[in-house]
Image 1 (cartoon, helix red, strand yellow):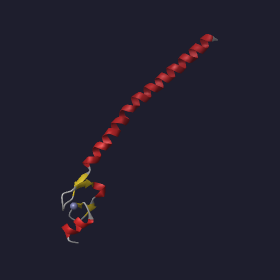
Image 2: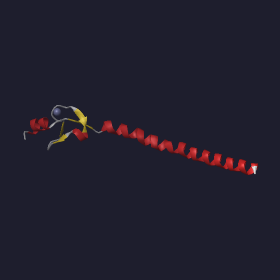
Image 3: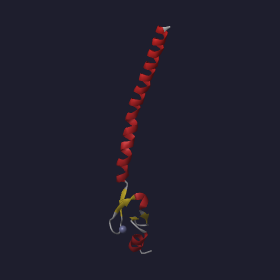
Image 4: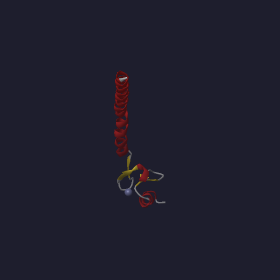
Length: 80
Ligand SMILES: [Zn+2]
């Protein structure tokens, strides 16, 4: 019975070692994707057509002639 327990323990250790190995290898692509996301964010910057201020694209005001930092600069540039 002692041998059976040792074999069972060895199998559990082997299974645990393989599971840990898969987790370690699976971290690579996840970390790579997490690193690429913040790098892409600064690229998504636009310049105000009126004053040249750089701001994130989601915060920019879209006008007929381009993107602006605020509604006031869009009105000043396009006269609407
Ligand atoms: Zn502006």
